[in-house]
Image (cartoon, rainbow, N blue to C red):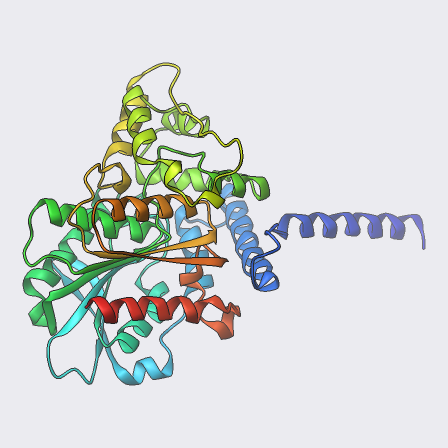
Length: 407
């Protein structure tokens, strides 16, 4: 082999090794379906890399978020099964001015219970198309009407626009749901990730407004419920395997419409007023975690700002608002029966356990489903033929069983 051939071989090897390193994602050994996880996260990383490169070089001609949305929907959209399509009437409409997709059993001969579902996606990505499979599956298996909400997304519509949409659809289901064939006395809300945030924020708001009829249940799937504590054990554990990315900060920046200076405070964890630190320590209490989740010698980190500027005050105000951060609500009494789902490989794992314990201590009926060998995002990977994850069917059965018992 000549010098040019040898050089090309070496360069190609280095590039291939570098590409493999970038695409590889470390996971704890006990997680199930390691190869499937590598493939899915690898595809996601590659798609994000290509999208970011196109955006930075001006090739895409699109805004950054449009490319991210396209990537996510391409990867995580699966339509209803043939069985679902045969059993359900599926149509798009608007309720109180908010676009929704309705999944209604064709066999319904009387008013049915309902689930108002808020999709995940960090308040910025995914949509009702991305949740066709799980929403249709729940509607058919539980024999209920599912309303999937196309709430407004950041950055075009920062908080509280999307939250207001979520409230409006829940109010329609409770007040005018009979128009859809719903029994307004058997309405639940639910969501995953950012959708879980919206679901409990809606429950708290309707409780405080003394809305009648009241919600019967809420399904809270590995939600993000607080922003003030960035050092819970599950977050620290995740950082040992994979450092936080600029993308995660970008989502929070966009949702709260933060300036560049405010974003820098968030990145350096220098954003809390003394009042926020006090509330955060009290309400996001790591001592409520199962003992096995608390490492020896663990101490939470404090994000107290070195100087209390207007930017710090703004961030602390946003992070203290229970509509955006439901765990900052001190009074969790008189809420609907709750299913709280937590996943092992998830930086949000711990806040889900803390929330569940606080709900119990407030006197609410709570069921916890712990996905000990699964990950944040399993709701978007239920299609076994496409993704190959075993946990999906078991996870979905837990949701259906909870709905049948409570509604």
